[in-house]
Image (cartoon, rainbow, N blue to C red; front, side, top):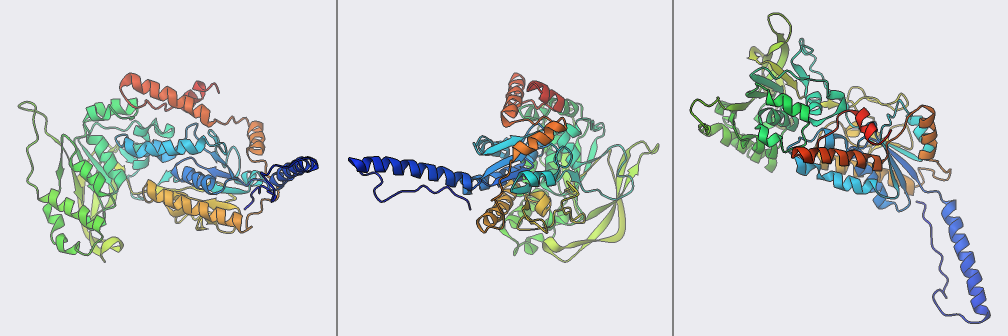
Length: 500
């Protein structure tokens, strides 16, 4: 690891008189000159990180913290940073978004650069980044969703969870989604936290959503929504659900909505869950308690008040086909194969029994997972698993190339999982620096070289201080509406605000 060593002689700091003083001054000048030469002779490692979500920022943070000389540049395709913290975390979970305060401190470091509005793979290639930096870390996440692979999934009224979440969270690419919320029943395929997030947003009282950073256009659409019933459907059973107890409890306590869980789905689970992990045990116990509770009549403000909103969990059902309406113009329901479980715990497999069931609904949301895409032909990619082949973040067969986050391990886990994963990749990089695996003797220009490439292609990057102007504009708009912020959803408008 290259460091600049300060030289100190045995007499440093002592008073020297006469000719000794002159000698001391000469030695001091020599020491300063040598020190400068040593600093310039050992170039600082230049690292670039592709993607400014949690994986990118945590990777940068760890490198900067544990290598006092490293310089890190972060590239982002949008003009705004923070990835899924901005575009994935539910609007009514502001506490989760507080990690952006830490990311902001990292970006403001004198050794960190942020360059938004730059699409790696199009505006600049990965090989070009490798020419500019000693190490390149790919942390660009999962930009697509897994498909159901069943007939009818492209019918109007069927949406991926990723697109729906992007729509209400202001992700520019999803602002034309315009989901049809004119039906009474919505069906969400999946039993993860994202599925619960969507159900909660669909059923939340408007007065709660108005205090969040949900986009103005999606709030207006939800105000006109006719959806009052949401079913969350999974292929396996209660012991295999992927959501956490915090999200389930929020759903159970949602004002104006009641949980509909079938006690028969939980028969015998008290004994089955005895040997499970504590989080799984507590989660299952909460589901059982909710299923067995007698329905409490909803507080009605007046006689003849509208029927309450409701939601429920359906288990051991696997989607076979999205059913079209009579005229074929939209979805009217989903045909489900009933399943039985083989095995137990997380490894249990859902096997079709041969029986089927049709669930009527006018809105279908597929929440079966996100998927990473290949970024550049020069980067190895496992299309089957949707990840970059790697060992502890080191990309297989490409020295100096690393990956972190979902593109490294697959789209699973929460922000803390991504933090630990990113620290692991950063540590691999630091070990390679220390062990001489990464040769930093040839100096690299870093952004200097990339800037000239971008300029030649007519691309103007957005700096972190540019983002802070966009941020200030959003906060000001939000304040006027009584919200934390009003997100700007059009990249062209973002660029106009900063004079691009």
